[in-house]
Image (cartoon, rainbow, N blue to C red):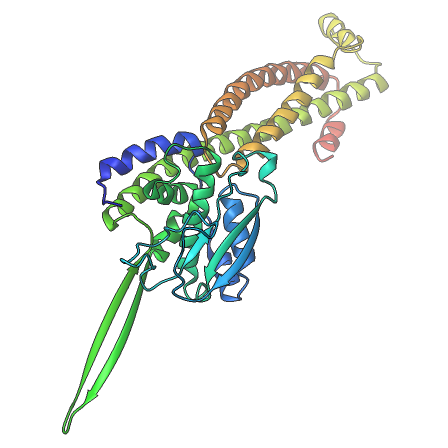
Length: 361
């Protein structure tokens, strides 16, 4: 496949992000640890899940330098640039089968769907590289399961892995540098020769990769900023809700105390007001607003805090939640104002001792 320019990469990103979203970077330290402990299948399962593939991973190992063939049922073979013999240049070999019965992305049929993977026996030598390789190969599954028109395009496949959270670890794992030193002994001296070989995984050039990484970082930063802003707003108004709940508690206690000590000189206007407090259903409205706000705020916060993949649908949902939040806050503020006025009336006829007790209740 020929090299491409950064305009092509920008166009590809603009096509992919609306389709699959843009995901926060995976914490790859756990994956590295698993691979070092030879728990490769477990690591690949986590990689697949982070890509949105709850599949059943079936691994078979092949000798180092294994040469893919076209009739072995494995369609995805292009994980590393290959030499004229179609052999990975100095690195890890991996193949992922793409069955014709592959379920559609994000559907129940994908759960525990068996995917066969071939890996070379040296796959755990460079954990970050194995993660890079598998993120690329499994991204073929993502694009095929979406029936994406560029499902066989290697550049789109690399970019899919980057967009779905693997850009940071791919920066580390896409290049493997191997250095060998040879010393020749002479009669009176020796000469040391150092040979360095760099193997690059994936199809993006260094320029392509840096360009894509910067674009992804900017997009991710923008969405995370919007998410954090909404989370902060939700937490701030959750505190206001808690204060409103406390006002409701105070109202009940002040009214209860007044009913026990009603032998007081209450003004006519306050008497009419206090009388209305005892009418059936007087507190129903503000209790309903408080309870509904509590449910909504908890629901919104739980949803927004767990977002790590910013799809168009989730971004739209966050925007809708913010609109609903404004309405809820407005209703809550009205009830707070009513409660404060009512409590102000009741406090006129409450002893200082009771007020102090209630304050520390």
